[in-house]
Amino acid sequence: MSRNPRAAPRDQDDPPAVAGLTGTYREASPSAPLRAHFLCAWSSELAPGEGGDVAVLPDGCVDILWAGGQLSVVGPDVVAARPQLAPGARVLGLRFQPGAARGWLGVPLSELVGSRVGLDALWGDRRAGRLARRLQDAATPDAQMGALQQGLMLEARAQKEPSGHAAALFRGFAAASEPSGGRVGGWLELSERSLRRLSLDHFGYGPKMLERILRLQRFVGLLRQAPGAGLAALAAEARYADQAHLSREVQALCGMTPSQLRVQAGG
Image (cartoon, rainbow, N blue to C red):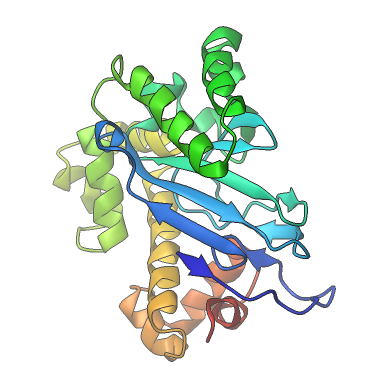
């Protein structure tokens, strides 16, 4: 769980609040029957006086959301998304395991990059409506999360296992423990064309962009663990070439500087 005190009003030139670093954010392991397909269940709630522009940093993942009485799917992003949230807004979500979303949603993830679509557009009115009614009948956020997971457990019976190749690609880049660039195809025993098709199908973009995004997430994780650490040291640990490389990438992907991001992480 991450709980940040309500921040003072931001100047117009200040960066937006970063999702997960503002308000109250909680993650939990999903119910056991869903763990092969979903990485985590999460909830986010802004303080009553906190709202407006929020930055959702790209993470290479896809989520099913329940917000404002609607079910939707948020596709992968290449730059920070900037949803406008009302003060006190609450969002519930389940995040797919790497390699799982393609089978559940029925479309290549390249068709969902940078978009948020109603679940009914992907599943049809009947199937998505059945799940939505479960949540509408639940009286509390905890009950809604339970209803969401129960409904998805029924759906999971018809789903194949996530792609092992896609999961290995994601986790290798996330850990920075595997070869990158042109050597990745050899590591996975895939041609360059097959590797690109795999990445587009399951993550929405090619392996180079996936590597950039997961390196950013590695930096954000390190920043949360040690917000007071020097940026040069964090850049090296996150596997950037140097601090200048870090600065360029954070600006390009997040629309802010590493120092601005560190302030929000509590450093």
